[in-house]
Length: 371
Picture (cartoon, one colour):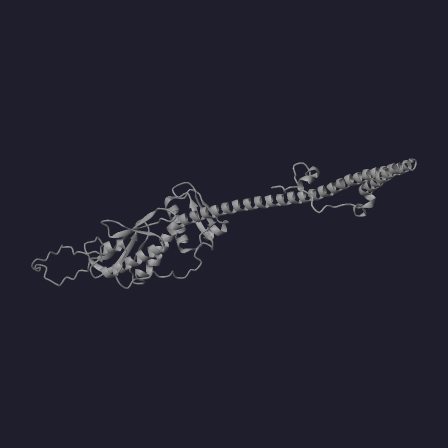
């Protein structure tokens, strides 16, 4: 670890000899198992079977144990009422479980504790038919499995030979006979090709169960890290797609807001231009009406003058009455007689379609544009 840190996290061993390569690999596994790397880091390597051995100190997505204290113990059951299916088969009298009758209850309790902890960690405990052991398989991040042998240690008892004369020996005793090994009460669990845990003078087998699961956890760690990296990548991709959608939505909303603002501005301009055109038409109509009223009044005056020259009384009355009718018509159409209309008119309601002629191309006053 010191060499890695001194070389900026990369250590290259040029084509090491097999024994040196094996020593490095054992040191790497031991370091990862003990959590000796800095927090958030993991020791990886390439060149296991040949060429240069390249060792790297890399950051890991999986949490690395920061505490160097003892691992939590594996809970032990007090009774044997409910056993795991695999444990129940090993607990049978004719099972291949290689333990003595005296050690069998303790062995079954330990096996059940292993089964409970295996399920809690979401591993799979499987039977190995005809073998005193079991198999633990992963199924969350990979489908690897590891075989375990579980048995009771046996040893040959020391010889106790009484003093006898060289020429005489007890009846039926052979001096060259070998004694059979006897159970010692010490339970042993061996992970095929890897580690062994057993009852020892310094600690019991139960005390070492956390180390066994730490070994399994270390074996699952690369797949878990790969899975978490894949999940993290998927999450980042989902977040990126969400950001893209949000940017597109924001862009559309901004475009819609701008189009709406342009439409509202164009609508106001169209309204102003329509009012100007509307009042222009009004003033021309009023001017024409005023001219017509003036002509009618002049015409009525000429009729009265003409009636004065007529000696017949009846004709005079008819002509004067007609002149009066003409004056009335002149007063009716003369805008000067309607003072309330002599200003800039703004109608209370303007139909939207009337404003379309004043709207920019592609826009209508009847509805705002759709972005």
